[in-house]
Image 1 (cartoon, rainbow, N blue to C red):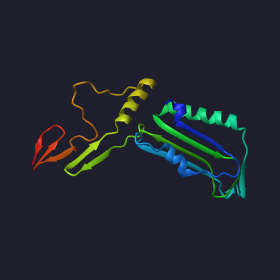
Image 2: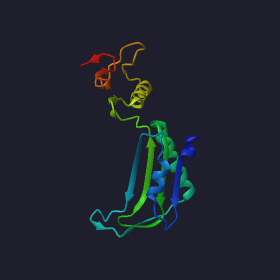
Image 3: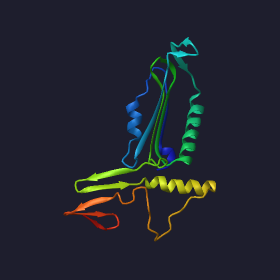
Image 4: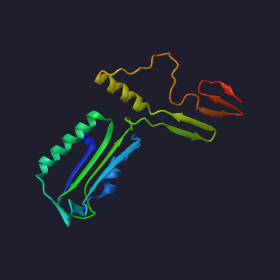
Amino acid sequence: MSSEENNLIEILEEGHKVDIAKYFDYVSTPQAGAIATFSGTTRDTFEGKTVMELRYEAYVPMATRYLSSICASARSNWDIHKIAVAHRLGPVLVGETSVFVAVSSLKASVPIWKKEVYANGEVWKENAEFLEKRLELAETRGTLVKKHVAGEHKRSCCGSKVRVQEDEDHTDIAGDNKE
């Protein structure tokens, strides 16, 4: 499936509200570890003036091309699975959503670790996609980043925090038994 097929871009005709659940459901996928959303709404004041509503007009083919270009640009910088973008036309009252964007990704650009807790122990997991993306960006930018050398014992954020209980013994990632 091409990246173009993983985009849902809609310019909504006047009178049609943004169905946030529709776009969130579109980007939801078991392959993605994260979903980010943005909702632009009409505010009640701007520069000291009371806002009653916003009115949007667009040349739909051009607006769709521009949004497709923005999606392509985002894909060139991040590991994105699916993108959904919706923008309303016509009047949008205060508090209503005029634009909604949802993106599913592999969470590759954030250094976050998670602990998986099992019935018999727990394991800290690094965000492998983050580490791969960091190396890729460093190579692209010519930045020095220490690369993992094959066969070298890898020390990570988690160190010996990996512990799974087997019978009465505790075994860490190196296979050492701890009492």
